[in-house]
Length: 345
Image 1 (tube, one colour):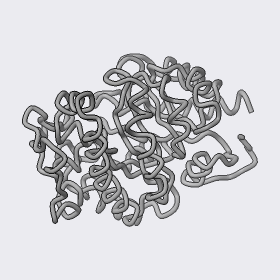
Image 2 (cartoon, rainbow, N blue to C red; image 1 turned 135 degrees about the horizontal axis):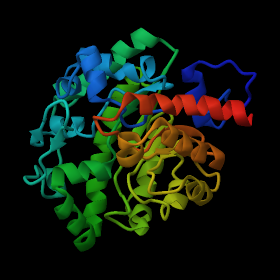
Image 3 (cartoon, rainbow, N blue to C red; image 1 turned 90 degrees about the vertical axis):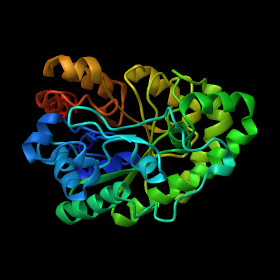
């Protein structure tokens, strides 16, 4: 419920929304990334350096709060830090492109190959995140929510086994697939806990069992019980993120025990709310490639209003935004939330 008489800090607002408590207005969060080239230039913290150096990472991450007006700060911009630390081949790109894992040469082939390197948490690409969280916590104290991010086992499997080999294995040998996911869960928990210890208030768990690649049945068979275990292991609110069309698996996601589900614009806000039926809170879902990248603040406002009218509890972009997104469209998100509250509450 919204209670305008409350006077909340951004951190209080985010944590209350994730807990299902009253808020003074719906929070604006960024479970994935709102880094842009313009913001990189503004604080002189470009990719790929801002993904690998803690000080530059913190400089860029905090702009989501100071320049855009979001209620959370998310220093993990990509989905590849752990994979780099595990030994995957990387393509770091430049400031206008996302760093990626080169998945044409997977590092592992079977469950027996899975091994966490002894210096995993000390690898520079993991330290960039944990140390950045330390820096940000010292800077914002308890004013703003800090979102960590730890890859779920399905996402990790794509990186270390390759997408096609892993999906084929899930068909040919589902039992080994389950054992693989079980082992990869150790990585999810290890890096997640390291970020909690560094000061993260919330953890985002990207686990890309998207409708573009697998059926909703896969979520039930392979991931639901693991996600329920993550809730037991990691003692902060967890936000599950899965891209693409996911409304068919949302009823199961609602049973995960996670605090919220971050959903894609391929799912309409009202159908998503209907699918979860109050079982989990939703975060979303302003369209990235069309609305934020190429349309106007008025178009952004319309999508924000659609989400709020449907009852979506936390407003955000649908995923990591295009790096050349216009800042005015991002600022329109919190502005639109505030105007909706004035008009409707």
